[in-house]
Length: 460
Image 1 (cartoon, rainbow, N blue to C red):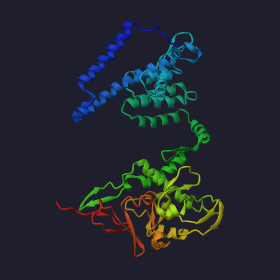
Image 2 (cartoon, rainbow, N blue to C red):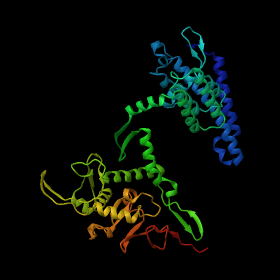
Image 3 (spheres, rainbow, N blue to C red):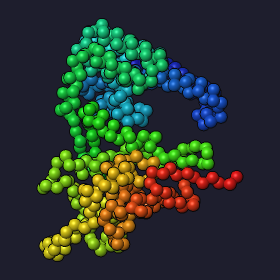
């Protein structure tokens, strides 16, 4: 293990002076707050120069963290460098010095351990485990992200790969990364090398993945129910394909100003929010599928319980089976519109009466509405009608019938926001018509679904 003598006071002062001088030089040339004043060319030049400098700093960080790890082995007990400085682990010591998280410190230490010379049992020094990566990192040519990708990927096949081929893979990956590959491109290339080095490892990885596949409910936070999914690659691929058509930027509606096409941003949801909402529609579609497992002879049914007085008044909350958090009354109303209501009279915990379900669109009605509407009736929304909820255009409480002449396919998101998003729906000659929010169409024109909205041309 490398345990050199402690630096002299002169060496420590020299290091401190050098870094102080570098910081002063940077402040003198380009203070951080003045980047906005640079020309385009100077901005790109500065960005590249700062990245190169940052890589040199990252290399020193990794080497320092790796050396702290080398000097803090468990076998030394109280003599470990970390223990002598009042820290449980090397990561804690590394984290406390610059004030970073222990996770960041651990990542730096792992990188440093791979690119730093190592101590041997005889007291000598061993070369870095990844010499080509080490040289490129130290020179500031290879970024921290790409270096970690190369190291982690090649480490996973080290014991099963031919040493000469393994060294070739390291050299080629470093050359590609230094030559202009982004870290994401390096990840793809590293995966290709991994398969070439260990063709049988794909099957081993698949077996390992099969053992660790999970869909875990983590609990609630901030009104949201959190899950962690670790999916088999083929399942992830199916999910991504199912979501792709409805979260693609091309699915956003296009509005025209006169004869000049321009894209109108009508959907302020982020991409993760759009994926969530598409996933919600996918779950609805799966629950209605004839092939899905049944519960007691019926398709899986979400039971929401709410006091009738609260539902009529539009206040309070409902409760859903399996969910500890209360359900807002707006969501309860949405459930009632899309699903139906079954009245239950209870007193002191005893069931006195149970009425038949009301206002539920039948499977035949839903298929007919889906065939007519094809997608969510809100313009630009690509959610297939088969994934949608079925909205009573005239509310049942106001006498609206539960038939195809009063039903429209509306996706989960637009159904949830129908009262707040500004869109309006009505039935005309047995088919839905839609009116855009006032900021899109000040004239409030009703359009048959499927028509392209055109923004009125304003006077100059």
